[in-house]
Amino acid sequence: MDPKTLPTGNHHIGNLSRILLDHGGLMTPVLTAYFGSILARPSVMVVWTTTVIRRSTLHCETDDEMILEAKLKIAKACIPNSMLSQLQHSFTPFGQLLADHGLKTKIARREIYCREHNDSAKTRWGRRHIILNATDDSRICDVDELLATEAQLAMFADASTKRRDNV
Image (cartoon, rainbow, N blue to C red; front, side, top):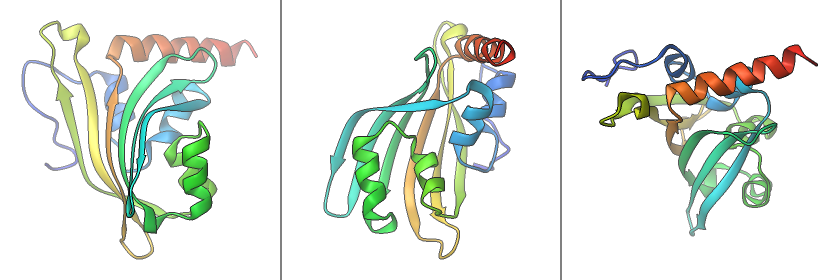
């Protein structure tokens, strides 16, 4: 699917969901800009010989609201051992770990999708893509990110803005 093409159907993507999904970079800096500090709470992590599978939810650090569900399939050979250790033992989002370790990345095969629900207020939007090493095009990670509903995101972003304004 063309990166600018969104699925057709009965649902239209909300403004905030579009902003959070329709870009060609890592998700962590975009989420941080809207919601402040972000924590990754791993729910499943399996380390194989060549691959790491990690499922997690990303939360606003201040109020612990869930913003996004993430499924990652990481090529172990493409990340430093110290990063793998941090991935296993910290709440740092994967995108932040990539930046902290100086890995230059680019996004490929970005696809925005819709998880439809009979109640359109419960429809959720996500994106799938591949994170490549920008230096040699090696495949670092396959990513599937699914946002909370548009209403939840708007509420969290509004609360986050109010907290920053009051500081």
